[in-house]
Image 1 (spheres, rainbow, N blue to C red):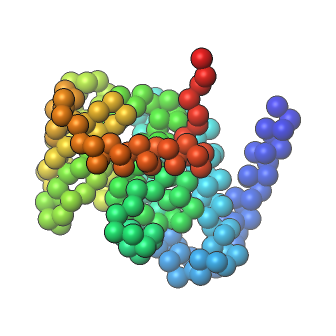
Image 2: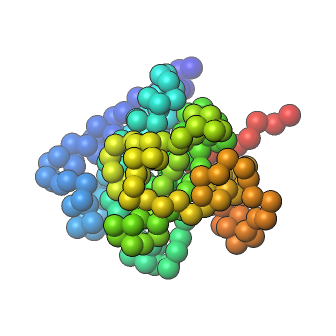
Length: 225
């Protein structure tokens, strides 16, 4: 208990120092891209985001809807949109929450993945969450959001980095669902049934980011026995 208290104290102090540096520099979240990646300020900001995320994951009280609101607000405010080629030097890379928050930048997939893992760690059943590929009609481009299903047949709520507000899917006329997935399988559009035909490439990518999340601490190890 004492060791845990000391760890929390160190994290709080580190976050406070990083925040002070942040404010003294007069930076907004969108301005962080101008900070040299190897600078002391960049390192402090990175650690501040990670410490704040760990603090968020300790807030297990409240309803699932309240936890959705906290996670959606935190991730959207903590990450600046950036394409994979700019952030990771790859055409398409799925980052773990630890990686995304360390950099403070990511694309729509990174936003959705960070929300998924965060909510699972906060006790929201993974069966209620689906990483959903959609077509953003106004932008005419592929996009990913996180969908939350209060029950298998319920209308999902959409957590999106393009909008701060969580909205029912029926109100998101700008999004056309294509397919979705989670730890339990692949779903066509918003259909409640899993597809019998799986995508080896998609499953491989999901298994890869899940394995890396386990290694870097983004997700805790499964209990033994």
